[in-house]
Amino acid sequence: MPRNLLTDFELMILLATLRVGDDAYGAQIAREIEQTSGRSVLLGAAYAALDRLEQNGYVTSSIGEPTPTRGGRAKRFFRVTPRGLRAIKETQAALVKLWTGIPQLKEGRT
Amino acid sequence: MKTVHPPRLAMWLLDRFGRDDEGLTGDLVEELDRGRSRAWFWRQVVAAIALRRRPRDPRPLHLLDDSELPIPGPEPRREINLTASPIYGIGGLGLVALALLISIMSPTSWLVGLAILLNGALLGALLGYVRWRRTTRGAAPPSVLERK
Image 1 (cartoon, rainbow over the protein chains, first blue to last red):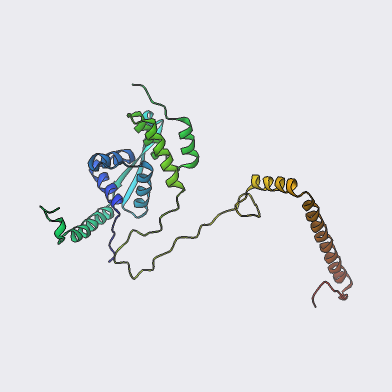
Image 2: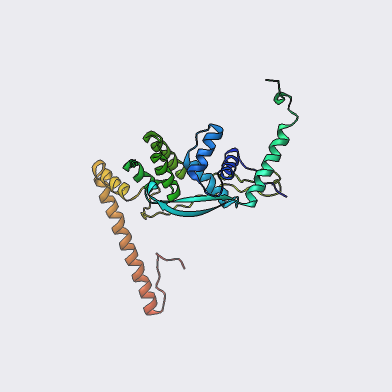
């Protein structure tokens, strides 16, 4: 059975979406990644990745109500699907396998 | 609380050249309202436009255990010539500029072009006349213009 491995950015997007919860939208997801990893996120790149993840069935999106602080524009909420969760677990398992048994990465060594 | 208005030019560029997604546009406006700088806003807009115009990455998500599956190559780009221009990459204004350039650099080439057009029209009329004669008279007249 083929595994659904994710790129590092896709993995971060999915994990941040899970961390934010049900009302996760683009800016919130980007903020979560910036706060946890210190990595600056381009919103356009985040939306491109979210579109790709949605096309692959890893997330679903829904449109919310327009708000004045957004210039009357609606939010697009994202939610991770069971398939997305499976992809996260498979990617994690693959990364952990790669991680183990590397002497340079053992504690106390530089 | 005072509402921060996004730069109009940036908004126009995003609407015109960016992705058609009010979620992204709304997020950018909201972030600006939350205290992000205008420089940040411009950087995001430029990046969003650049990412929108970049061709899609053909790399599949299934990276492992897909060795039996054929890896599809990048899809050929299909472009529609909306300007109906016969020259690839040159649109309506480009054709006007080309015509102006020819007029300035070599005005006599228009006469050559006109002569070619007239010759083509004459040849077409002659062929039409021969075909009409053949159909009206029934018998095929000897012709040097048509193959037997």
